[in-house]
Length: 140
Image (cartoon, rainbow, N blue to C red; front, side):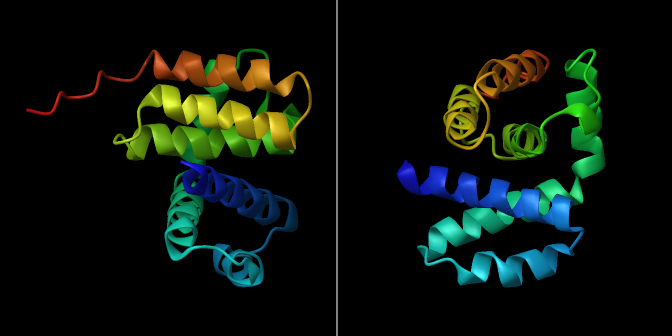
């Protein structure tokens, strides 16, 4: 769904602004998200992803670091690092979205916002993490 992708893109942009600018999440939401003309559902999902990722950034970073052998977080491109964070947050906390969809969306966003080699890197890290996640519970 295009609106979900837009929300993911907005969340990535807010994470980038939060990290690079050193601003509080509230400041980023006020100065960035509230200036966007978006559907309320898109804004809500973007905000959920952004705030959840910020709240769990240390735990997310540990998981990314464990999977990205020979890559320190600070050496990763800022866009890639933040894309990995938000996609991992969604994988862990929005299990209504299939992991393959979350990863595919992250790859499409990497194609748009990052460098040429980023798609393979993001795919490798996220797919490696996906393989460590418990299988989803089937719905009756």
